[in-house]
Length: 61
Image (cartoon, rainbow, N blue to C red; front, side):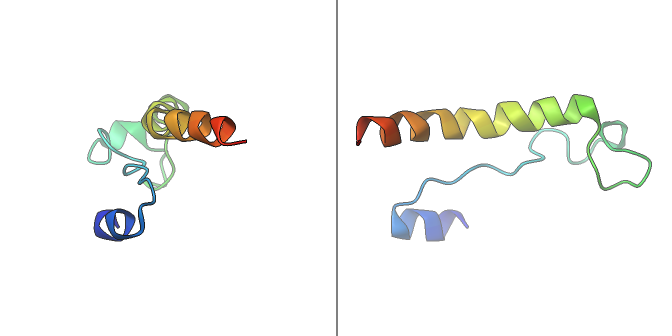
């Protein structure tokens, strides 16, 4: 995805599970869905990329 983002000039949001994908304690018993604590980490990861994009979109109006 990084190559496609660079080629098209589209910002890339990082891997949602960055920093905890390999830590079972951050997943519910199904092993798929993140716990509430992990969801806060997802928010931090995604927000770091989205916040600058939102500022750019607002400035272009």
